[in-house]
Amino acid sequence: MPELPEVETVRRGLAPAMVGARFARVTLRRPNLRFPFPESFVERLEGRTVLALDRRAKYLVAGLDSGESLILHLGMSGRFDVAMPDGRNLSPGDFYLDGAQGAPKHDHVVMALSNGATVTYNDARRFGFMDLVPSADLATCRHFAAMGLEPLSDALTPEAVARLFRHKITPLKAALLDQRLIAGLGNIYVCEALHRAGLHPEMPAGRLAGPDGRPSSKARLLAKVIPQVLTEAVAAGGSTLRDYAQTDGSSGAFQHAFRVYDRAGEVCRTIGCGGCIERITQSGRSTFYCATCQRHPEGLSGSSKIPVKSKVEL
Ligand code: ZN
Image (cartoon, rainbow, N blue to C red):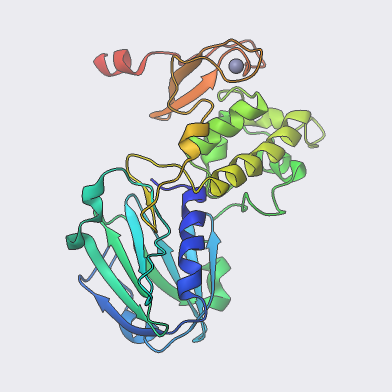
C-alpha cells in the first residue's frame, strides 16, 4: 500500500498537469471504486478548474474553483497515468512491481484536461476512491475529521508527541500507526523511524512523556527522525513495493535505503552496532528492528519474538 512518501511523489507528478487546468471531459468506466462515485460526479467536475493540488496524510486533495475539493485515495493499487499533449508522460511513478496491475482494463477514470493532458486513474484492486466535499468543510469531512496531525508539518513537535502519547501503555509502534494521533505513517516508515531513534517498537508509548507531561529526550528524537525519514523517502521518489509504482512509470528508490524494513536476519546498518535485524509480529503485522541498538527500556528483548512461521503453525 502506498504510504505518505509515495502519495507525495504522486502529487508532485500530477501537479504540473492538473493545477491551473480545467476538467474538459471526465469519463467513468464503472459506477464505483471502493465506494460509489459521488452523485453527479462528472457534472460537478467538468468545466471546473483545479486551483491547487495538496496532500493530507495519504490523501490527495484537488481544490476546485466551484468551492468543492476532489479527494483522491490510491488504496492498495491505485496509480495515475499522466499523458501530456506534447507526448511526454509525466506519470508520477510506478511503485508497483506487478506490471499487470497497470493493464488498460483497470483504467477506471479518464480525465481530459483543458491543457491537453489526459490523466487516467488505474486501480486493479479498486480499494482507492474519489469523493467531492465542500472545500470549507475539509477539516470536518468524514475522511479528515478524526485524522491526527500531519507528520510533514510544523505540527509535529516534541511537545505534540508527548501530549499525544502521554499515559498510553500501547506499544510505541501501534501508537505511531494510529492515524488519529499522527496521520499518514505506515508500517515501513514507522519501522525505519524507530530504528533511527533507537527506540524499541514495544516500549509503552507513554514513556515519551515525562511525569510532568513534558517531552522526553526520546520524544525529541522521534519528532526529528519522522520527518527526516519521510523527506528522504520523498526525495528518493518513494519506495517501490510489490504493489506500488510512480506516475511516469519510473520506480521509487528508497527501498534501497531501508535500514530495517524487510531485512530480517541481516546485519544492522548502524555504524558500530553489529546487531542483527529481528522480525516480530505486532497486531498481525511484521515489525523489523535491531535488538542491539533499539533496547527496550524495561529490559525486554521482544516479548512477542516468535517467528511468524511458528505462530501460524500454532
Ligand atoms: Zn543496531
